[in-house]
Image 1 (tube, rainbow, N blue to C red):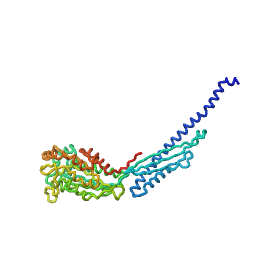
Image 2: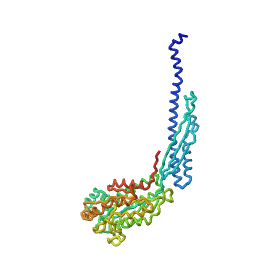
Image 3: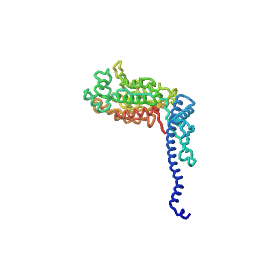
Image 4: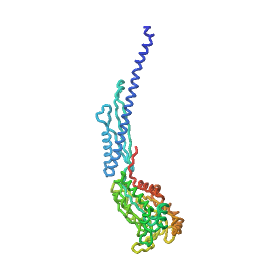
Length: 429
């Protein structure tokens, strides 16, 4: 007995035997824990996808006027989750997930909560047959509201200015003229036309506006909002012209915008009268949650300078605009000039429309020598009031844009459409 007690080899064996079980438990626990983590990651991804399915389907049913949109979303989420669970998988037992769907304002929120039991392997030695995993995943979708966009483009003669200094140079060197303002009335003897300027390779301000609007409509056409937006196209100079009535056909809106050009009858700029005419035909907008009650937005693209000249194509006569409404500050230099009157926008906003306005900054050129007196009066008297007036015309902060270069105008118009439609489906998790 004493010899056995003094035998260190026997003690090592006993200690190893005693330590073996917890070592096996630790190793087995690590392996089984890793398996449970993998299962949880897989179920998290599944719950995330199911939440997205629930939110999107609920939003779709809500827009379609289904009063049971909530139950429809819950059912869609549960089906999506169940479809992702591998059947007859003995190592994983998953219960029916708890799916909830809610709407707050324009945000549809879906939450998918699950619990599951993951079968163990080595931990069974310690009578631990399963490990529990659970989590909840939340997805939000911005509900695409039905929206009517009324696009109003200034096509008065000042929008025929060269878009950049480089375009001015093209006109001057290739055509030998420095006339940039009011030179595009075809019936005016000796006038250079829009066609001749463009044929020389020059881009005009109205071309920049048109291109930006067309690009934004193209973006809208390929977005998830395409089915919820209608567009109407208008131009204005002395009066308002509806180029295309409200339509969900965005291809037609693109074609109508491409066809817009400088006015050949009228030519002046009467923003106040044109906006009053627009307000008279605008229907009362709705909340946008169904096709029968769309919300409304007006997108106004202008250089914000008014003048009361009016050309009548049939007679070839320039005269005072009979619908002119004087506003201060103003200056007379051949014709009356004044900044945009925000009062013309007020009735449209009061009706419930969002008013988004681009100030395509009025171009003052030094090369049009014959018009320097007029340019000077516009620059010194009218333009200082434009920024504050046109900002007041808009709905408020975030609805007013000011740009000059083609790049700036493209960026501003893109932002205006995205903001006005407020429709591009957005997700957050």
